[in-house]
Image 1 (cartoon, rainbow, N blue to C red):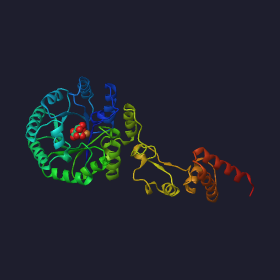
Image 2 (image 1 turned 135 degrees about the vertical axis):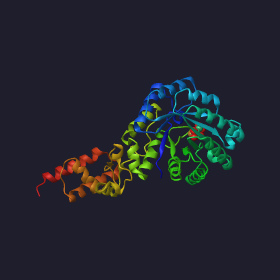
Image 3 (image 1 turned 90 degrees about the vertical axis):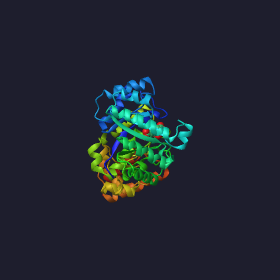
Image 4 (image 1 turned 180 degrees about the vertical axis):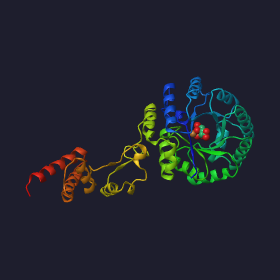
Length: 380
Ligand code: HCA
Ligand code: CU
């Protein structure tokens, strides 16, 4: 997988999330946190969306962040004029190319699309800033139409072309094929944007990179229209498993949890329990067999190292699936001393109670302490 860059769209796609409302202060806080994390680009809502969106865009451009600031507009000269006036480093242009969007959204044919794309791209380029052209609903667009328009915009000299799975219909194999085909047609970079309606957003992003795409759109926690897009954290998990050195050299992974908490608070959601990396049980090991091997060597059951993210693993011992190795490690943590044979005995007691009801740590600790008191007070 080639070296990749992130277009972070929490402040654009993420604003389209059902419960998102970002005031200026929150946007600035999120933009600074994303920049600190190390994202390459920060994409902002179109200045044409509202007056506040326009002035917030200007304000974020003035922060002097390391990340390049982009705004995302329709393929329209009015939007383009407004966009270049905000001080952004680049403009992401999108227009629907599928039959659905041409018929039920903007109602334009491919000739019109090509003409306005050329006009907008030339205008943005004349301002000396980056330009990306993307087709909305790429996977339900006619392939010949798609390749034609990408070829046209590549010739004018865009920085990137984008593929967007707007409705989340694509599977990894389709992604691989489309990116490969596109790569044989254009010489510019390829950016990809995947919605998560069928749960493929992270896999599709990874496959796109395998096929030669260079940039992936993400948002914190994956927030966006409907159930959102590829999540920043999920992609980090996938990519660190693929190329640890590159990911660690580029992104401050130990800031991921704070970043997710910031955005979760702002849009009033909880971090999902099964979230990659930061879900509450992402590094919790439960069954006795797992616990034993984790204690011996964590890599036995962990593809990700929690320390890379400033997190710690947890061995869940208060349950009937536990084993004596996990209990022994708890005994050690409590600074008590029991032989292996004694640990096995106390484990049997814990499992017995665990068969009757759900246990908590205090239950286990008191069984251990009682057992310990017994064995140390009885003269042998
Ligand atoms: C949308 C637009 C978009 C744009 C993606 C892109 C999509 O429908 O809200 O600019 O590449 O999913 O098509 O987010
Ligand atoms: Cu989208």
